[in-house]
Image (tube, rainbow, N blue to C red; front, side, top):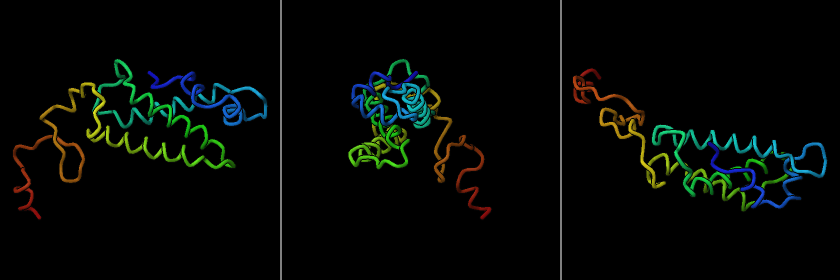
Length: 148
């Protein structure tokens, strides 16, 4: 499932700009394949942030994720052009997108959808290093400290 569509992107970037950002052969038409590739890239990145917290694919796309995806795809299209500087406003939106995705991943930004069953499983906990591990009933932190 895509978090945004080609139409969503075409509604926020002028046709002339899209031609410049997507047409590598110097023509005067929008290469929608480049937009689709950028959407696919962004979908995979967003899924990486959501994986483990939410069951994927999501049943529906919250508006927040659509807005995040659109801003991220716009940034991705601009960043394709190595000789063109990404406008500051686009770069700032990209920073906001990454910040929001991090907050979603940590659970400090609520999408209003149910988290995954695996995420809510009390048999999993976060250890000191921040990685997920199973609860060890026999060797708690005090027992492990004896071996230091």
